[in-house]
Image 1 (spheres, rainbow, N blue to C red):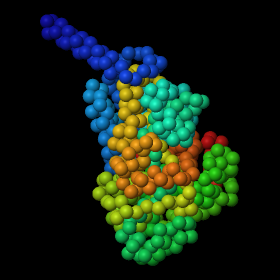
Image 2 (image 1 turned 30 degrees about the vertical axis):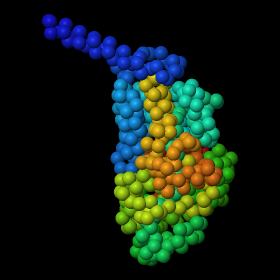
Image 3 (image 1 turned 60 degrees about the vertical axis):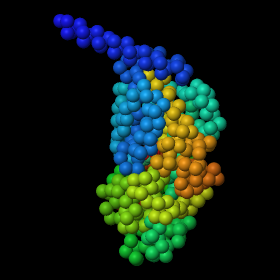
Image 4 (image 1 turned 135 degrees about the vertical axis):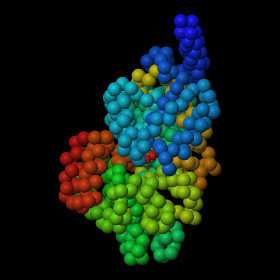
Length: 432
Ligand code: GAL
């Protein structure tokens, strides 16, 4: 009996201590707007939900978490990452949790329709305008980016990075050995691909075990054929998917697929990027998380081992993929979550994360000296290019449309039936 009382007493003391430390950490961020709950068991802990696990994905996140823990040793972090490139599995887990009113403290979400049409429209996110004001962020992030995470004057998430999607990475030794010049348009691209194929090298690496990688190639071809303005109009529903130029893009897509590795369907993005790293394949279209993978995981040197060029015919555009984090409604420990978002949105946070991730900082005032030549080139291109949203990475259209587009592309990769692809996209367009 005595023992039981003792245990209860210890439990009470621990509980009181935990409550105290909650109020200690809540001082800096204001925003007492939300639930008002003073945190149950999860107070004092921030659960960070993303799909950044493993090679090329997790280093940046871990560096950001380290920085946060250094600044807030009293707040526990739970890294709740679910594997699968582009959120293949994570998005399903997230949807279940959000529907079950069990949101993570904060989660990875692409700026644009993935945030706005899925979570803001369902009234699942807290506005973060106060956080932006407190941190004087309004002129620290490019306006286009703030627009992507805003709806009706409310801002719903904080961008940690900007990835570029319309890039080809290539093995420099392979290009040199076979006398290949960097192609700038589709004709040059296919000439180079023919020369490589004749030389016995796989021209283009693809790993579409998860179909978003093929959708990414297709969206870049669409961008090349339509140009940035009409590409945007396509996803705004102002140009139909039965437009001749979409048909032309599908034909080019089919042709490009003639040059990929035979085992593409069993590889994920890292496995396919490896083919370029080891010289079995010459080049790959991949968002610049591949740069993080090459440089940090495979120890390859930028502009020595691997080079990069804009996806053919898209030189004037920059396909933006921005990973952002927000505050779901119903989260108990909002103050701690806001502390995390504050670090994530700070210059220090962005400069800890992005050099490892391969992306450029979302902030305009980050320190360029922390980035390699790829990073500084991408920063310049970002400033001087037309910015367009990515379909494959959730910004250009709703999740419902993207799921159908991924399915249609997946079928196209094996069947190469242009009419079917056009029909499937046209049928799905109502859901954009
Ligand atoms: C994107 C995401 C990137 C990267 C990539 C591969 O959707 O924005 O940060 O993780 O998927 O998983």
